[in-house]
Length: 527
Image 1 (cartoon, rainbow, N blue to C red):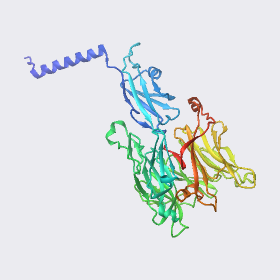
Image 2: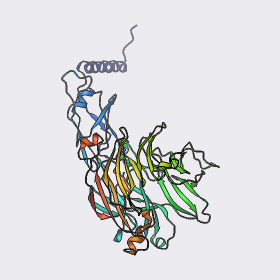
Image 3: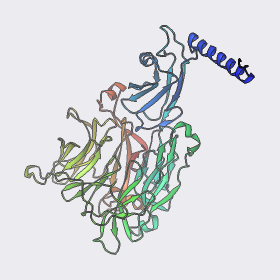
Image 4: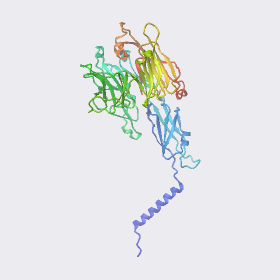
């Protein structure tokens, strides 16, 4: 006896037939939805020098050559393409110049599975900005004296960041440029010569979009879909205490690239023999680094390694292995006996700029030699100085090293003349960029996009002479490094490249410096 078809079975058969017809229709006619850019990783962002590549994610696999031939960026940014499925990465050869807005356009492209001549594509236009070009310095005149001052070159705006009751002695910006770590004393204590400097942070008001925050307030990149977690930029001038001076004097400090660690040289107030570096991790109390006594130090770009001057050499100490329960001395990972000073480490961590004081060479005993030393042990002498090697900074490509040195002038009186030099690491070519007037104190700062150098020209009051103003001298004497009061200090900006082609070829030019219309000490670019 035949089984009668139930209504539910009939409906199921009809649904299967309809779906089969729909699938067959799609297979025969194809998918005619336009290919498009589904996501642009830098859309609406403010990017810094550390951001070197953006991603375009497409709705379907694309023909790479059709995208690469039609993608445009204005102003132009030279870079290289790479692909992984539906994602295209564009890696910049040099950082995007600061203070600019960029338009990214892709008017046409072809899907990989489109027929020849089929250009079905939804045109794409996106935009992003580079960070504003700004720097910070210690003021010396009027209401700026002894205070951190921010100047935004892009917006042509000046902001005094720190309170008038404080005298700033040293500072270092966080990587995102949204805040600054600084040491300061009260103005009353400074005038009395009290060593009560404490560590603080202050906001700059130039926060980066697309950021969350880590334990010590350092921004961390957030994906675009987590927009609700992005904090708004804090207003400029908000200070917070990081480390007090109870029981210890706080001297030199260095901030790690990730903003999670600070190393501070501290001296016990009641026992001066108790001195050395302390480590302050995010959300943890400071603790001494149990190691042999040392001098100057620098945290490497990996934020996990400390380079500490010990004796006539430099010890390499791992910070990532330290624990709160650790007891006893920390064993160095390595020791560099020939180099007594570390000036900079390449951003990729593969090389460092080190100074040899030539103590073991009688013929060069009173000179200093700058070396490029790779992580594989390769050593390359770069230049000699009869005065001192004051500073050296790698450019963002790690292919150029900008050096501030001083050479001894002939004559009976000791006098040195500073020079700004640049060394091409690959070729060893040494080029003089600027000869400065003879002076004992000078500092420099290389812009994060590698396009300019800031430097100061300080004039100090000689011993026994009358200071030219209590506010000026009293507010800045500690910043000169020699305890001498500053009577005046001009700030200069030196462009490094005349054309974009020179920048791509790593060929700086000798260009005239531009005097900035204010006075101050230790100008430092915001990252």
